[in-house]
Image (cartoon, rainbow, N blue to C red; front, side, top):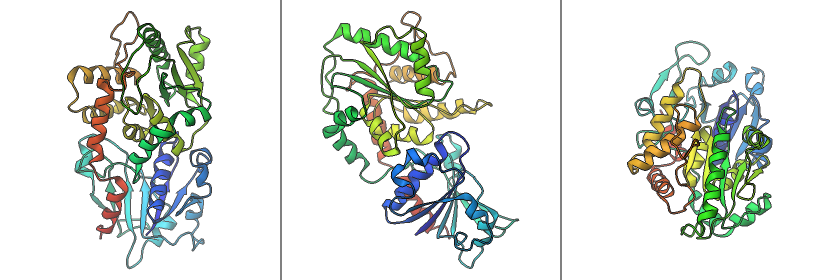
Length: 397
């Protein structure tokens, strides 16, 4: 099938990140996707192999779909996806008026809130404008069988297992991170308001304590047992790097022999996945990265997009309740306090002295790591989003 996917880049990289991953997954499964986007500049680093395209994917400027005279561009395919209610151009909508119009789907934002299951699949008829008489249907990603599932490419878990068994350390070293099996790795991808300095203080204190307590953990094959090494914090470009550099400039980086900072180059989506797989603790932001952290199966923290009206707090609570369902109560409470602290929703200082206390993420078979693996296993039982979406449009009528 030919899919037209419309994306407006509002801010950050979440919208185009989700849309690119959707298109790439469709292309890999034998479909053809045209990604109509108003600002494709992020694809230069996010998907360098995809500029101008990968198998089955073509990137087209939004403006081409706005021009009524552009008949070739304005011939809709079998499916039209408007990502996150972005409203495709009127000229394109007008061309959807044909005896057998394309399936029209509004791909919504990801949420674990209860309204998602109630709203998934609902149809909305259009009564005016160039699309009058057509209808679009709402497709909600989510975490239960009553939703549209999550983006997950076929064979993803097998690729992770192969990477962890054979490629992890060489890949890190090629990235400029001289990691050993003894080291503990943290990735950071956050927004500007993150209290990263508090977390670096806590990570540094943990690293120093671990050095005193070595030898430590007895992890599974993914992270073999070893004496305590350095904690290496891998910083994505932008806010994570600038916040960490500001922390160091304040003189708070007092133990570089225990905690090392590694600013990274911009990573393509496929490389970002490897980063999450390689690290013991991942701090992520935005929808696409949050889902990839779930598939990594390691302890993680989600820095949710902050909204002025505070509704992000409810969204975060709903996700924590879903993701952490069935966890031991003490672990769940401790992790939730840490998540709220990073999101500055509630004070989460629970003391070792004056500093933030972090749940134990360093032990590869510890409670947080095991709970993350169990929660991932529950999500893997769901049908992935692209499989559900293809069935959804085939039955949309």
